[in-house]
Every structure is written in structure tokens, then in C-alpha cells.
Image (tube, rainbow, N blue to C red; front, side, top):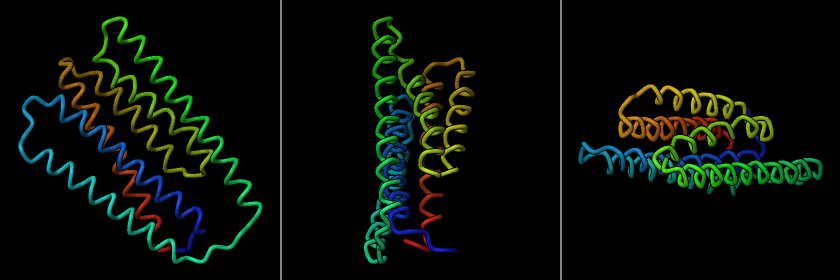
Length: 186
């Protein structure tokens, strides 16, 4: 496997850490709505999150030893990517806040996690292009299709459980793939 530049390896590892934390958030939502939650579910979710975050920390620490070569063109591209990512995140959070407010005003609070999951899934599509991480296309598509499939479940509690589990599985899978991709170079 060819080495990837230090800066790219670092932001892939940081991305894996963010996806791990987001997966934990969705797992918590799923477990909250699971009335028959088995005793092993919370320790397993905690161990999964801690394991991924520990691996991210190790990869990040190893990346500090990789020699960094300053490239002004790459630095400028990195600043542009950072700015565009910031815009996408603010649009995502704004849409989530707007939808959550409208749903809450109309007494549809239980729909907030579902709409939020759709918005999160969709935000990965422009992120894939901007960050040049094709894996994020799959993350977005699997998130949206998975959440849409959950809408077929008639019981609302089970539907929310399914949405949380789908999002956690997609995000943790993406995190594990990112960490796998950085194994040789970071």
C-alpha cells in the first residue's frame, strides 16, 4: 500500500474519530428507544466506541512521527477544503435545527431523529467530493437508503431503534474503513 501524505492521513483519522463519536450518538438513540434492551447492549456499544477512539488516538500519535513537507499549493487547497466543509456543516446544523423546530411545533417530536438521519446522510454526498473521500458517497447513500427502509416499520419505537442502529452501523463501518485505509501510512 502506498503511503498517503501526512496531512491527508491526519484528517482521515480525525474523520474516523468524528464518525465514531457520531456512531455512538446514534447508538445511544437506538438503545434509548429499545424497550427490551438487553444488559449487554450498553457495554458493547461503549466498548465499540472506546475501541475505535483508542485506535484513532494510536493512528494520530503515529502520524506525528511522519515527516511533513510543506507544500504551499496543498496548504491553500487544505484551507479551501476546510472552509467548504465548515459551510456544509453549518448548513447541515441549520437544516437540522429548522426541521427540529418545525416538527416540535407540530407535535411530531419523534420524527426529529428520522429527519436528522436523512440530513446527516445527505451531507456526506458533497463532503465526499470536497474532501476527495469516495467512501463518503457510500456512507451517504447507505444512510439515506437505510433510514428510508426503516420507514417501512409500522411500530414507531422499532422504527427509531432501526434508524439509530442503521446510522451507528454505517458510521462505525465508515470509521473502520478509514482506519484500515490509513494503516500503512499513518
